[in-house]
Every structure is written in C-alpha cells, then in structure tokens.
Length: 169
Image (cartoon, rainbow, N blue to C red):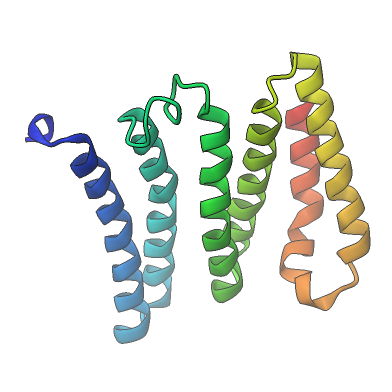
C-alpha cells in the first residue's frame, strides 16, 4: 500500500516511526525501568530523524527548491542539521551519552559543510571553508576545555577533531 500513499503520508509515517521509538524509550525507561532498552530506543528514534528530513526532500514536500535536485538543497541540509542538533544535544546531556555527543559533533560538521556548500564556492574554496571551520573548533576548544559545564563534550572533542581533520583533508 506504500504506492497508494501520498508524499505527506509517507514522510509522516517515517516520522511516526521515530516518535514511536521515542515513546518506547520513555515507556522503557520511566515505567519499566529498563535503562539499556530505553537507550537503544533513544538511539533508534534519533537515527530516524535525519531519514524524515531526507524523505521530505526526496518527496519535495517543501517545493522543488528544497529538494534533492533543487537549488536550495544545501540550505535545506543546513536547516535540517540545525533542527536535529538541539535534540542530539539534549539527549547528550540528559543521557550523559558519548554516542549522542558524537551525533551532535557530526551534526555540527554536516551543518558547516552544508552552509559552506550553499555559497557555491569552487572545490578549493569549500575545503578552505572546512579548514577554517576546523580552526574555529580548535580555538573554541582552547577556550572551553577548562569549563566544567562542557566536560561531557570536551572529553570527546580531541578524538572528534582528529577524525574530522583526517576526513576533511
């Protein structure tokens, strides 16, 4: 019956899967007191969030401009990253989870990549922008590393920036 559904219904059902996983996480953690299962459902729910955004772009729910082939595809990717990032940050802090810290870091990198790509620079300009982004991350790290409020994120930053530098070079 998937072929008979309209585009909004398809994306809505994918979003419902994500919400279902978050609901199961709440039920497992608060009512059943099964923390590991609740964490697994949080992970599944959060992994479906980008899929919801991808399906909306694929089905052109926000017009042809914000689609995979539209001129606003990079801007749409940046907006999607901005929408997902607070959720990952919240789950990082609430669950004190290194995995969600990494999801947050990846979201920030994807956001930077899409914002730089939205400028339609040549390839060399894009990579220069990524290197400038990495430099800003390192400068930010040097200022925040002693702040106890951000220790959950600071602990993972060194491994993240090393991976980010390797991948971007």
